[in-house]
Image (cartoon, rainbow, N blue to C red; front, side, top):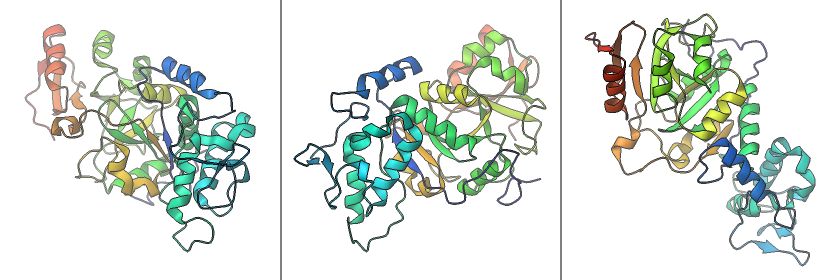
Length: 357
């Protein structure tokens, strides 16, 4: 069975949103691991005015005499009133209602106000005849934990989530949700016989979903990292995931948020690059802005690598380890030299002469 739109029925417990409306959530910058991410949450959580803004403030924000933020084009003050004339502000409020319900009393200053107010200004404010179906809801700064919670919720609901990785921006969905898999292929205009990789949170998870024929030390030498390891799949994976091949590519990105997301989701994630097939890969969220209307959530982790360097768009190195004692490079990617050196010099694997399909 192919993976085209409409060919896959939703798995049990999988509900694909009928009209996805992507929210754009920005992660704290310069975070090396999940512990640091949560520490950044604590640092930015309170600043004496009850703000929940990740420590970020908007430039040129307008205030009332009471000190509450005012929308530049509306009469409403603060997100507490939900700005009835502005979808951007309502979207930001709705996003935070999901992200941090315990802090609903402090939401007058979401994201420093800037993202919501900018969204309202872009729509013309009260009484505007402008288009009221924006590509995404207002930019929000929910912090590490808030973004993680929103992403997990979207994935479990069958949504498509744009995520940063160690190589490129990707689109992730639950690998157990057949409808979401079909939506990924439709989103990218991807050939139905091109496989999707599976993203996991830990090396130990690989043994559940694959038949492993290499030492665990080899896996730990390459993962987490910019490498996709192709192995024989086990019966634990959804049969609608890559039904045309007995193999599956495994990714554990060396990216703190992506690993945290995979571990928290507690299941296999299907992962592919955030671009239309055959188009350049994306290194920042604006480069795939045309896809936003079809996504449930966009996680903005900032630019990845040097956006001016073609080498930064090569993606992960894809290597087939399904044959004992051999390896086959399917895609050179960005880590070919070091990957081949580890496989040959440390573990004695022989490069296969079989051509890539």
